[in-house]
Image 1 (cartoon, rainbow, N blue to C red):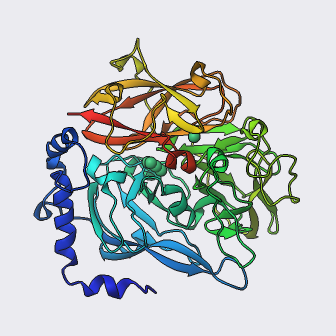
Image 2 (image 1 turned 135 degrees about the horizontal axis):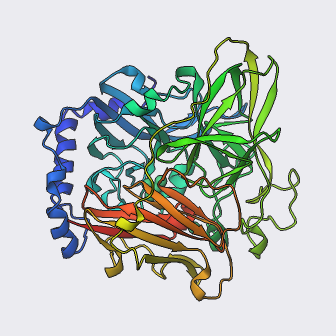
Amino acid sequence: MKNRNMTTMFSNGNSRRHFLKLAGYSALGLMTTGFGPLLNSLEARQNPETIPETEFIPDLDISLIAQPDEVAVFPGKPTQIWRYHAIIHKGDKNRVIEIPGSYLGPIIKARQGEKIRIRFTNSIPEESIVHWHGLHVPAIMDGHPRHVIAQGQSYLYEFEIRNRAGTYWYHPHPHGRTGPQVYRGLAGLFIISDEEEQAAGLPDSEYDVPLVIQDRSFSSNNQLVYMSGHRMEQMTGFLGDVIMTNGLPDFTLSVSSTAYRLRILNGSNSRIYKLAWEDGRPLIIIGTDGGLLERPVYRRYAFLSPGERLEVWADFSDRPVGFKTAMISLPFGGGGSGNIPMGRGMMGATMGQSQSLPDGAGFSVFKIRVTKLVKKNQALPRMLSEIKPVPQDEAVNFFNPRQFYLTMRHMQWSINGRIFQMEDVAGDEIVQLGSKEIWEFNNTGGGMMQPMNLPHPIHLHGKQFRIIERSGVMHEGYVDEGWKDTALLMPGERIRILVDFANYPGLFLYHCHNLEHEDMGMMRNYYVKG
Ligand code: C2O
Ligand code: CU
Ligand code: CU
């Protein structure tokens, strides 16, 4: 593996002890990052989460380094990026897959029940920490921004894989800098398998294709352009005019004439996709954030907001070599652009004429071309996995769901009028370990005058939840049937979810996954009291 910074890292013969020391400190709440006395004592009680090394025998042991690098996205000057690199210390080499020519981090693969050790080293010139989006892990392993480490430091992650099989991902989570760090390239997939999934009989190996979709903007000398920092721009979120798939513009997937499992992650900062096949065939959706659905569902189109995943069954067995199609994003309203007085230059912009591609514009996401004829008949399974009915009557607050209003005040997105404070937990953000609760999110303005109405993808850390109901629905195209960790609320919509606060006490985040909204503080802690 080509890796310039590797020598520096391993020239420190002490790195292993350093890692362990770090993890121990944070587990005991001894790190002097200044959280209040309340949290110090709360954290101290969490220390059984950190397993002494002698007892933690990992199935997969890797180093993950975030570092500056460059990649040839276009002919000419290479693009300066930040990227995750991995080194395997223990475990099967095929568990960590680099995507050639991409700024994306390696795909990490694990099985349910396995123990994973990841030694993260930060070699970018600012603070960072890694969050495992969708994974059910202890608070101290979750990559909360209070655990950021400076350039040159390391953080030890050790956890057991308890999630269902599914398409998860990892990305940085320093407060205020998640947007720019993800934008520079720091993101990767984390794919989990389990027995139930393997029994489902889905396409695998080369017929199981991860597709990370993102938007970017480039300067005339091929460098990434983020945003001006103008408040108005941040209010809407970054929107690029180049659609990338797996880190490449104009992406074409060459396929054989058989069935595929396409795992699609929206890794964009703020762009929402309204995915559909170009030829109008329905999307056959087999999975969402937390893995396989019970049975396939059909949609004319499906929304995919930042952070969400969709798994699509795509069968090309009746297609000749040379057949072409595309995954497109259909135009949609309610993306907010019509309500925004300025910023992003989308007013009156038409595709192809303007630098900027507004949210809700139509475009092609990636293309597909059949290049090989194969005789491989694969039928769409009628049953994919077992998904139990939502046990909403088990919620402790069944008659009185917790309410969260997504609101804006003084050019500041907030949740229940509050913005993120590193250690701050309000009384109504404390839940009991082991309880199930209904949380209701309202993108209805909370009774206040809304100068802007925008979509917000709401995400909870550390949990997969179920969606009980959606009201005020402005659109179809939601796939709410399975397990979710991120749910899109268009303006005017309201959802109720059921969350099981099992297994892990401590401080976790919930936030809008529009990364610019998150960075400006549309994020809060919830505390699971053990
Ligand atoms: Cu991908 Cu805090 O989230
Ligand atoms: Cu997350
Ligand atoms: Cu938002």
